[in-house]
Length: 206
Image 1 (cartoon, one colour):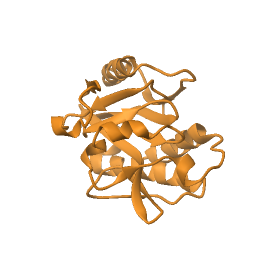
Image 2 (cartoon, rainbow, N blue to C red):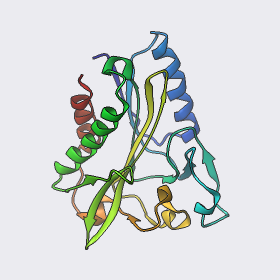
Image 3 (cartoon, rainbow, N blue to C red):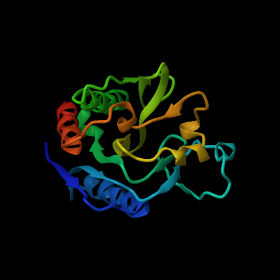
Image 4 (cartoon, helix red, strand yellow):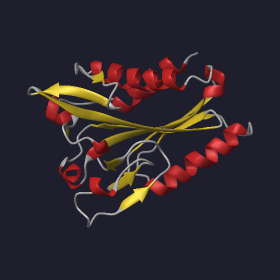
């Protein structure tokens, strides 16, 4: 597989990252660039997918950056790992469902390597954990497909603050909270990004 692996050490502005993904999509489609897996963090920002509603903004003072990914409103910021990708599904039987299932496996397998059990939910996209008898969200997934090329990505909460989620209805779900890995298990999450990439490459194989 010809896939570029990119890891940004400094936070990347959201709009710049999306512009980069959209340019890569065009170049990939035209055979001028390889597929991409990109790990980064964003500065503090709220983003809204194509299906969010205004009532899901609880604090009307915050700014929502609209995006063309699937899903509703979420927050990104320091302490949260973002994995973006530009992946050609033409090479993978044009199977969107299988691709999403593999994304879920990437997250679940990575967390399992830190002895954290997680699971998907067919009704509520994302990855979830059970903590203190409550089901909480640990990872969000938002994907856009154009010309059978999948892009955007997923986020995993490592040690980010959680109060920003109180200003929105995260992903449109009112009955469940959001958490991070530090709250679940206060341990070192060394080599986390490298493990995400390792598992992503594993599950991308046709």
